[in-house]
Length: 443
Ligand SMILES: [Fe+2]
Image 1 (spheres, rainbow, N blue to C red):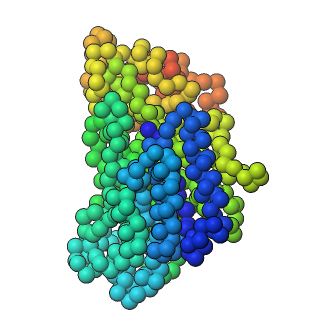
Image 2: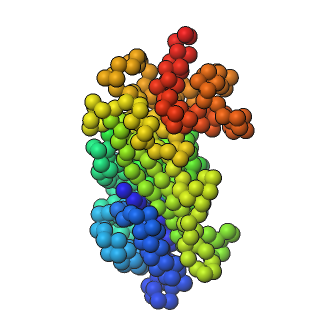
Image 3: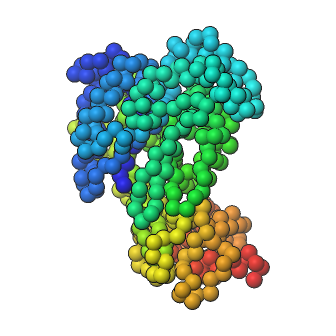
């Protein structure tokens, strides 16, 4: 699966009402052509479009009409349909004038004044018909636009939307579109970090077998009043996290997930470091026996001023893509064939790290008669290793000859990752897990 990730497009009235006179039209045209070309160079086809907010600039219906026309042209060229588009709202999709109305201000300020009790108060207001209507009013124009893609939201129950995609080999991608803007533009003012709110109901990611979760949210966690909770829930629940808002195109890696932040397709020309960009995200299931791996690749593209075109932005170590590979929780389709040898032969190379997620998948089946203990899963072993004292993690790695000469130059977290990477490349993952288990049991 290949996803085109866009964000912060900022269709602005009145310019957008006349596309031939809109200074942003050439960049938007270039995006469509470049995305098609780059997908072709990757020998892939774009399967979905994910937009992490700020489609409009001031939530004007004319801005959404222009955005819809542009997106229809894009999906037509990509051979997609509107059901292949996923959108979440950003702060620019909130009507500032609606937020200045007395009724909306009253609900917003009442919620903000509750402090740590905001989740309970939000739940109460979301159930109250009148308060819910006031909370939804600033989102009215956006919601009408989002309904074209079945991404509309409502209170109290549909605060986020869900979309499912088949990735192959019984692995499913479950995308949650989060709404981070219920308190955005409070009193008509610009948002400040630490002032927004996303309800706990939106942060539930049920760790069921065969499912990889992806979240889409405009604001990164630092913008929420309960930043720590949001950060922890999203990091632990969503394997892949897409964010927008900060106009900073970058991938971030965590022990159990990755965060892909989008650049802005159309930042303000007055913005310091004006840097239009977009990303392509590849999701590929690679099966070895009973084990399924999801390889996530991110290619990012930046606008070159002259000649004006989007060019590939090199990622880690000048590789063309940022890549991470996850184990998929659950049993794969062919339980009799798995052993670590096939994993070694067929799993992704090029220094990609296998990060166990949410599951209890052994790296080898019991049919190969290897002495694998039931208790310690790959996920548990990984978690234990990444959090044990550095001295002990080095001892385990040294005993298995999994240390590199330059490892001392890396952070302790990166040293641990490199050890797992070498273990997989050398077909020693089971030995590493076993050594970690021995350590746990005091052997
Ligand atoms: Fe934004």
